[in-house]
Image (cartoon, rainbow, N blue to C red):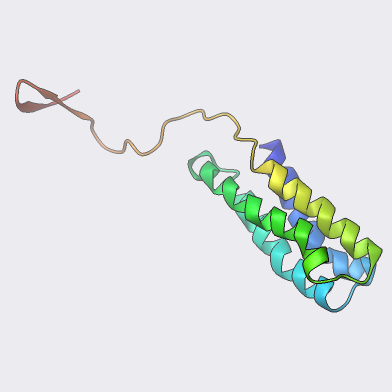
Length: 120
């Protein structure tokens, strides 16, 4: 849970980074696009039933690490910000967390016994 909370903060940081670091152009567009996406995936993955969605932060994080090279960022601050947030988002995907309950069982459970259905 802590890993996903930190990933949410990293995604939210990317939304504000262009204003704080005074970035413009490609870096600003990339941060304002992928920051909310990463934060959203991390936030939704806070709930146990949606925990597998944490893996969606991995490609977002990898893109944020590679983006300064592919998009040729001009500002060193934008590079550090993107790479740091990308590492946090990518690494957070590998922390699964504890599962306290089983999901997907819904309704009464039925078992087979001697060819007939019976409630378990």
